[in-house]
Amino acid sequence: MPGSVYLQPSEYAEFDLPPTVNPALVLQAGSLIDGHLKRRGGCIWSPDATGLPAYMPALPMSLRLASASTISPGTGVVVPYDGPTLDNNWVGEVVILDRDDEDAVEAVVIQAINSSPKSLQFYTVQFAHGADCTMEFGLTCCEQKDLPNNRPITMLSEWPVMKLISGAGRYGYGRRSSQVYGNYQDFNLLATVSSFGGPPMWTTWNVDNASVNMNTGEIWVPAGVLLAYFTNVKIWYVAGWKREDLPYDIKRACANLVNILKETGLGANIRRREQTTGTAVSKFENTLIDFDTRTLLQRYHARTYG
Image 1: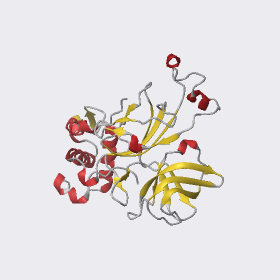
Image 2 (image 1 turned 45 degrees about the vertical axis):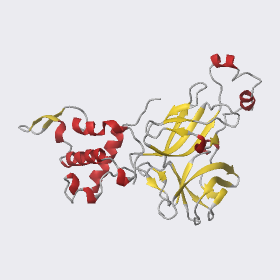
Image 3 (image 1 turned 180 degrees about the vertical axis):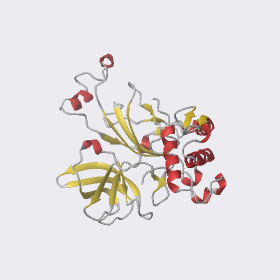
Image 4 (image 1 turned 135 degrees about the horizontal axis):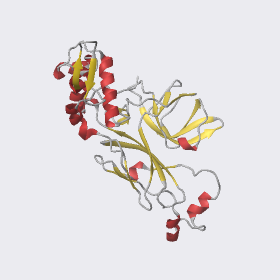
């Protein structure tokens, strides 16, 4: 079940929670925190078999495919699969292989897609996987951005950025005011590429050539094969903390919410409660998260601007 679990049973006593706390309340508290912080991927990442950041366990899987053969380590690995036909919009997508096997789990990137017969080509595969290998999509942070005119800089929302896993970009015509600079005139390479009709194609770019500020999320995107900056980019990445390094404030906020949920959602946000003729409750705000808990979480909000 996807969701953020910010407290383990071994930590309950440290945060003044009884050992009999229902784990479902901890999961519910984590979901409330993620919603408040606007962090769809939560604050915790999970590693691959080598210990490097690989995926966000709080994210719901968007698609699962089954490999139709064993998968061998290597580069340019082609894997036949059973499932729906994918198109160019999936190029660059991050796929998590064997998520339930801690000795083989890894994140791979789609290099190319073949429709007949149906197969995926991955840039690099580290480990051997059986024919029953699960291939899961949607488990990393992913953002699609429009780059500023002639500037290869944009911002990622979730932080700290621990690892860029994949990037894809495409070209498109800019504003008419840009044509005076020669970037979009009829005789240039961008116009030639666009003249074949249909939507522009996504192509991957090497994340090793990008520059990212881990704490601010500012990222410099390298130019594409035409040595021109992309119009649109998609970026797949992992952000947050290892479970054992999760900040104290987030754990404290989770414990606060668990206590409030245990009290049937009343807690510290109550302004008036009447019980003479039934129960009438008036809250300061339409939320379970009180001011003190919001203060604990304030610095961990996703940066949704830019």
